[in-house]
Image (cartoon, rainbow, N blue to C red; front, top):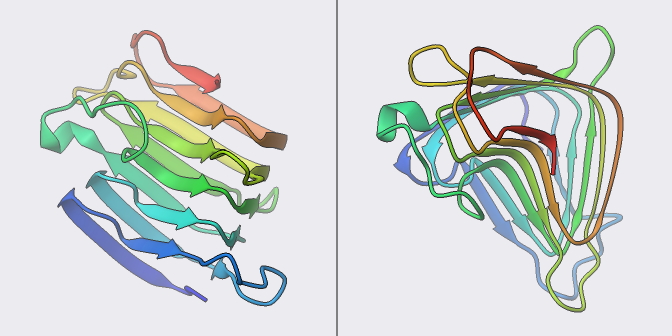
Length: 171
């Protein structure tokens, strides 16, 4: 369980990275984020492979603008990356889970389904804000990206600050 954290990863690194083995019981063993702030520039802020992650509240900030402004789109540039696992983001109406995406080429949530592994995400009560290096929206960003698997959303808001291009709420 991560509670009231204030984690930062500068440069290309992760705040939390967990790779569960095939024998893990995801109903009993999982990463749980109850609150806190998570900041990273390049690299996934939180990376979970083959397991389960539950987010109840928190603020996730990806700031590629300080590292040159343009990240390489894809795995390695997400606030939350899940592969072959289960993600549940369940904020509240009064306190949604917040994603701040600064720069270009980054994802709020990236869900990938490797061959033979089931991946799913349920995202409720979450807000995504896209901002560029100089206050514009940046380009080639996704709030939620799914490459296989299933994604369900409810009460999710995407806000773009400025005139960026090729930005997607869900892709």
